[in-house]
Length: 294
View 1 (cartoon, rainbow, N blue to C red):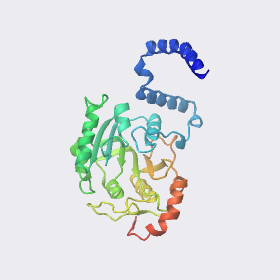
View 2: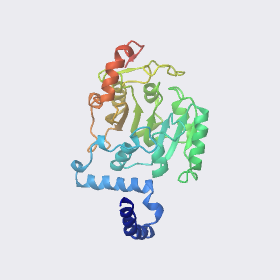
View 3: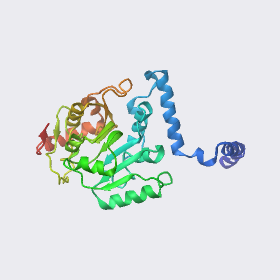
């Protein structure tokens, strides 16, 4: 009986689908870039009705190339804060298959300036974007470099970008605080960076500066959300939210998008179950490491 019904429905719906495919093209129905661009326009339409019509920051995340839900959050942000030049810098982009900038580069035509300290990852990233139908003609500039506070501005400049950009992404698992503090060659609208959610929301701590740092323990690396928020405020940015697990944080330049993205406090971003569990289980031991208060 189920087989009969399935075949009957197929006979009924197939002609409709055929006509739709002829009208708009088979590929268009399955094109993720088209779907995302429609979503951008939907966000803008809702914003035009009033910000109360928009979804919450916590409801817009999804993953295509990012590790978690950052692709959806960035799409939401740049739907409401129009890009100036679609330029993005990502430090520690890995192979490009899983990074913050890939979705914007591939599906939205952004210009990427990507860095990684692993030569094999850089080679893999160059191959990935060169083989991609949407980026083979102008793949992102992929630089093999070990980024430090001393060389970051020179390396970014040598890659071909300076001045205003739309996005800076940092995921170094180590010197994130010190490198962002040193960056002045570019002025991003939005900064996304990984923080360490084992550290309580009221403690502005980072690992000591060491240009050769490579973490040996998952528990001792990077900087707290409070530390990155303090640095952000010094640089003229505000914390606007994190992803659902609390450690990937989004900052926006003051004077930009404040009607849609007001400042939030670190404590409000670290009350998820994962962050709470890590603080309870890990912080009693983690706090004994050689953290630097900033």
